[in-house]
Image 1 (cartoon, one colour):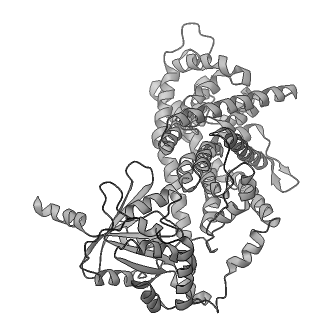
Image 2: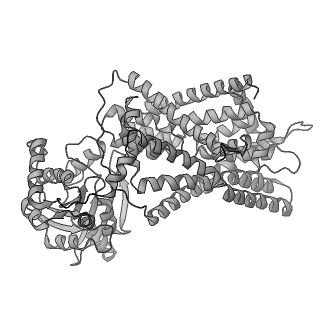
Length: 631
């Protein structure tokens, strides 16, 4: 047994190497290159900030542990991420000693910004070396950096790395071997950093650059020329609006053939079971519960993947930070900065990563307001509901000969979520905790444009598909089976005039809730679907599939939900449900993350309460206006 434990013990006792650097310097790519699959992800104790640790062995056979610290611009922390990086390096986190070696990763094309952090860490007195990353890009641009002189000026080893290329890490491994054996050291107090002013640090950075770098032949890059157009005060917002508009058009037009195939496959599977199985409880479970419920959600996978296809491309090519700058003035009007754009954009995938991404915002009140409005962004779980109702009630026709009317309605719903989020932010900034402070200027690094990496795109789409299919096969399937049971028992009494579900436990619950939701046009079937939708919003579609499957008489199969809804709902009810889902109260998992990120359950209750009030109010107005207009 002792022999088995030796490798694990050796790894636990191996020196800790900390990778540290500015965001977008290639630090995480270098971490992945060194560790491969030998890495684990957890959270730092007491916070939800991610902690990535791995291990690797050098060419000389020395074992190292590797810690990928959150990106930081300075150890004078302004965000929770930077505070974690500062505390780890300074050995201030309980139960975690300061690293044995700090590897500062810097972008060779942007030394002026990166060197400030290097000089701050150097004052802590820890063993260090500098990884001059992206040297290949710097050479192509004509930027000359003398690594030997830089090493002399900084008084530490400097190695050149190309993290995205196989073998680009070898010089770093040789340098770590050259530092072996590592001497035990203790970081100096953080006061050593504060003893030197920022202005003095910047003067030292400029002095070092004048000695070691020559950018007189810097050709610049295509990014600067593209930004002249993309960041233009007039053309920039127009380009952004057109891009977003085209994305939502594609969600409907591109996905249609694949959706039809999935729908036909689901219907065929249900038909085969009905044909070859005897009537009974098991057939009802499989056809009405599993196939009608799960199948009616699965059909929207193509639309979700198309949406993420565009989001991943815009992110990978470097456009998203530009969008943050374009929206900075607009968001400043409601008291936020453009830095809130990235968390809010993440919320289009799911509110949970959006809420967690808000920790990069420096101002605590801006961070809290961003968390509170993030769920108003239209997450992918709403898309199945939107797509179902739009397909059932909005005709498939062209507008102005080129635009899809259904895609136009989807764009309006997404836009309504954005506008409502800005309105809520404006209100909260003026009512939460007194008067807001003056708006902070947006400082955000703009990465160079580059073609999206097909491998990254494929991995991103696969991960999104896997997450969706996992939810379909676990959470949604479980809820559909549970809903089927509640909808099937007890059975209809003697002489019943309604379908059996009307007399079931779910039917009783739906009719009880109908009293509350009747003023906004919801029938008892919709009320039943809202309850499991609290666990995951997209479950509402599967719930409607199960409810209407059990509500049908004869041989009608409710996996074809669209024609059934168009026959049983009024247009006013359909519009009311769309308005409800613009503001629909958050799923329980998001409320749980909000509690963890804010450290208080109070904000979870505030979020659930204000979103329910907005959803009910918007649905009531929509329903009543639609009735007045004859819908």
